[in-house]
Each structure stands twice: as C-alpha cells, then as structure tokens.
Amino acid sequence: MIVSLLVDEFVKRNHEVHLLCKEGSTTRAVQHFYDNSMEFDGNAKSKASDIIEFGYFYKDVLNFCENGFDLINNHCLSHHAIIVGQLLKVPFVTTIHTPILRNFEIAEQSLSGCCNQTFVAVSKHIAQSYAKYIPSVKTIYNGIDLSKWELVREKEDYFIWCGRVCKEKGLKEIMDLSVSNGIHLKIAGPISDREYFETEITPRLSTYNKCDYLGHLNQAGLNQIIGHAKALIFSSTWQEPYGLVIAEALACGTPIVANNIGAASEILTESSGVLFELGNPDSFTKAIDSIKFVEPDHCRLRAETFCSHKVMVNAYEALFNSVRIKKQQLIW
Image 1: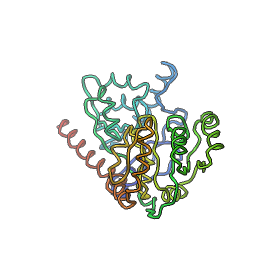
Image 2 (image 1 turned 135 degrees about the vertical axis):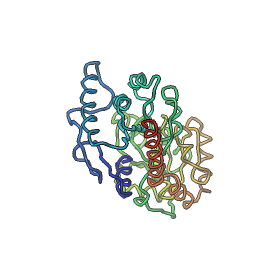
Image 3 (image 1 turned 45 degrees about the vertical axis):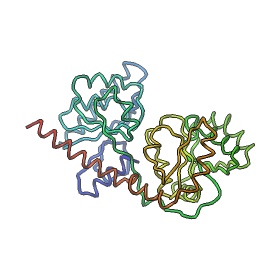
Image 4 (image 1 turned 90 degrees about the vertical axis):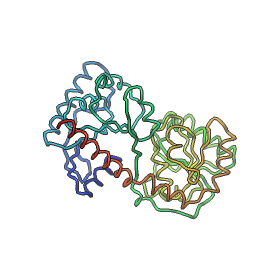
C-alpha cells in the first residue's frame, strides 16, 4: 500500500515513475515484472538457494536499471537489494519497513567502510535499531490516503481492536483487561495464527459476553466500526515499526489507547491518544478513563498533519532531490 501511494502520487506530480513489481499489480507507474519463479523474502534455507535467489534478483535489477533512472527507491525486504544497491552507480535509497531481518548481517558486510546508498526508516524507533549496522538512517513516516477515511464525531459505547489475530498483537491480554474493566470490546481482523485463535481467543469469546469478533472487514466496514468507537486499542507486544491502524483510526476521528512500545509514542500526541503499559493493569484503566477527554477533531487534525500520504510524499520528494544533487556533485 505504501509503495502504491508513493508511486501514484509521484505520477500525479508529473514525475516519470517505473516500478519493478509482480505481474498483475495495479499502479499508475510504468510496470516491469520480476521473475515470478522467485520470491525475495530474504530467508533462503541454504547457501546454495541463497546464491540462486541473489542471481535472479541481480538479473532483474540490472535489466530494470537499463532504463537510465535518476534514482531508485528500494522497498524490498530482501537483504539482496541492499547488496545490489552498493553495486549500482545510480543514487539508491532503501526504505526500511521492518525490524532487523535474519539475513541483514550478510548485507551489513557490504556496507563496511563505504555506504553507497541512503537509508530511510518508517519511524525513529526502527532507525535506532539499525544504528549498529548503518551510520545514518533518516526517518520518513508512513502515510495513508485520508480521502478514504471519513471523520465520525458521534461515538458509541464500545472500544475497537483491529489487526492480525496472532500472539504478538496482544489480543488475549486486551480481552482480559476489557472484561476486568467492564468495557465492550469489538474485534476485527484476519486470523493469521489459527492455533492461537482456537486455543486463546475462541474460549474467551465463549466466556466474555462483552467481546465480539466481527471477522475480517473491508475498508468501508472498518471505517464505520472504527469511526463510531470510543477509542481504538493498540496492544502489540512486539516492536511495531509504525502501526498503520493507528493512522487509520485517527483519520476517523477516533482516539487511541496504545501500548507504549515501538513507534506508538512517535505517532500520538496528548490531544490524540493515551499510552499505557500492557503489563500494568492500572495504567490501562487510567488510559481508558482519560480517553474521554480526547476530541475527534483533534485526532483528525493529527492525521492530516502527520499521517497523510501527501506529507509522506513531500518528505520523499525533498529527500530524493537532495540525494540526486549530492550524487551529481560526487560524480562531477
């Protein structure tokens, strides 16, 4: 979604944009398709398969670069892309969307002594985690298309939890806290860990009459269910790189009650949400009590000034211009 928003907005701004992607992608850019026989996830099971994967990747990128680009922005999660970026003469910007992947140590060796590319992270939290590998990581926050999210000022008597249903999202803990605080919790999202759902969530749904699972909703459905909630509860137990659901809820005018972990504290202000500690029940109780003082219009304003994809593209556009100028000076 982030790449799509970047590409389409750059095209609207009259930039010529080419995208190396899977066949079948929907985009305004000129499309180039990589070899569908390979999936570049950076988790090769053996040295041999890793070398083969790198060969396919390198071939596709070299073919792509024959178009004579001014700059390449890499959003691929594979460590291969970072290695290839070191070899190219064209300015190369890598955007980091995740915590450090298993094979990043391999790519780190190619950066030793000379980092021939620019790195961007989607939060300061993620940027700091890469500090031991990369001397400088800039921060550009993700953005969403605000036109797809309607502001809802009239709230109903329930809280909403949205996300993938799996252990690291903290749903079990939030269901327990919701019951102990007597609040109505609505749950929406795909089941990504069926065993976790059956062993931890299903029994609680059967016992907790104020916890409702709504299934995997589409965007319009999410807008309504999030928009009318008193607050969205963000309970991830792992170091979230960003948290798009926070941005989406703010766009709906819905305050956030967020576990103070990952990038949540960077997105939220006192006028748009409250932080708590998942392991501290009292802090959760205080958070849901104080959230009533947060105004929907303040949440939407935070989304407009911080979470808009146009704000994100403005930052990338400024960075790309800066990188190109520096590269031209070096070449001269």
